[in-house]
Length: 90
Figure 1: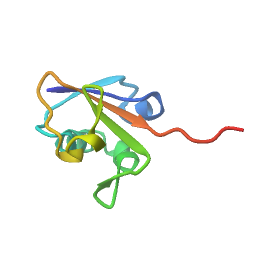
Figure 2: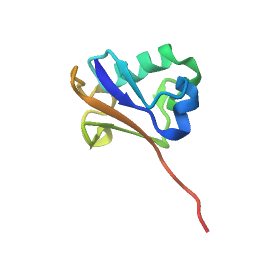
Figure 3: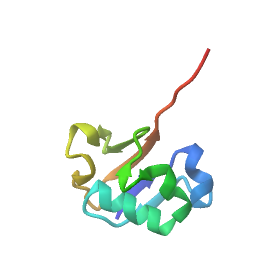
């Protein structure tokens, strides 16, 4: 199972868990199964079946946008990090 790191802003959607073990062969499968296990997180990750544009996903510290996007392979010992984009300031 891959280790999915949940950012602080989304931890209330996973019962406060910082890390969640999820099975899946690709980044997309892992995220879909995460959303199935924790339905409240789905709208934060997906919109109309696509990844939200303000959410960045990393597999082993590599941005999936520069790999195979949601088809990026994920192994049992891999780490998947969800990183919501930050904006704002003065």
